[in-house]
Image (tube, rainbow, N blue to C red; front, side):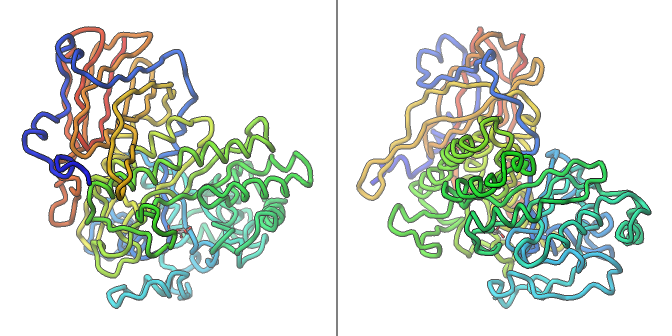
Length: 551
Ligand code: AHR
């Protein structure tokens, strides 16, 4: 069993845990943790696109989440929820993936363009799974009110680039290049450009990112990697560019399946090394879902609850999530065998925890879960991992933006809240475009009891990025009850001013709801310096961003 103190969060502990700078001499003596940021060891520029998002015609993501309609009493800009636009501008959302997910490989983009009244109603890919009596009809039967134009409008309103996933399972390469033609052909040049203009967009959308299928090993066609590579070559062989560089993302492995990556590249390159030029990125999907502590690999039985969990489930989720770092490294190593210069990058375009149903903020919303502080820590940990591998991960998308899995926002009719995950994205925006720096972190490990066997997890982790003289350092303390007093040293500079913002709570289950939208909010403070090093206490169960000015 875990020691009882690990299950309880006492008032005393909480009081001592608020992120604060401690006077050096005194505190350093008792600090058991150290962070050293190495200014002279740059790792690469952090692509803003790793802070991307994923939206699918699934449950309440599009209808109710993003789209409320022009005539809605909910404040909207041309049908798109205004509050969502405001929040996404704040986090500088760089890129949004659409229309799926599994939905993408059953979607005909033509259904979602042209006069609204003439758009057909179709059975949504998720119809069978979406079997709650509370689920509205437009979640199951797609009315196509929201299509390419509306999505691109949404992207423009939030200042993000669109990333469209093409249907490889049930449409043809021609449909793919016609969609590109619809989006990118110059004003007045083609019939499809005119159709676009008739919907109010004469100028091309200039869509750069295109996914060639989704999860082609599963819902996207059940291909072998070799079969998919042949399809990829066929779909990518001739595409109209109109002066717009197209960056194609190949459907990649499920989690750690290295045989997919190997099989795909082997077959792709059978036609010669120049085939690599057609691939911008290899997609990697990884969901942390198995909280069974090794008892089962059954997709349904292995899942845990989003809201009801013990500290052991907290650590187990983080352990599952941490695995993504090995996956990034392992797929990268396989890719190196085929692509020595690493022209092709990883695109982690679906990631996050996946729990069993039961915590929906809006009953009937398929796959909706309410993120807690645990998911905030998970998400911060994942973003730190991407930050630490800037040369490998070029783009990523948290699954999914709103009313779904690891959502940043929950919305229903006029109700809206920023979740714990949304707050993490807001904290981490500061890393975008910075120079990632190697950072050495040493802290006592977390020890816990895993069904009678001792288990450990790292004690502190994080990432650092430099922006001129400003250094951003984000740190996760995963321990459910122990603060970590830590000495921070920037090797090669002194700190002239410092401030911190932390997201934490005495309750590890803390989460925001429509009724209590600010139950969990980050707290900021400036830190007093009393020497060349900074000593700071990272609260238990916390995500902290330090903003340091260097001299
Ligand atoms: O995000 C939900 C689903 O998970 C996506 O549609 C699919 O790509 C993945 O399996």
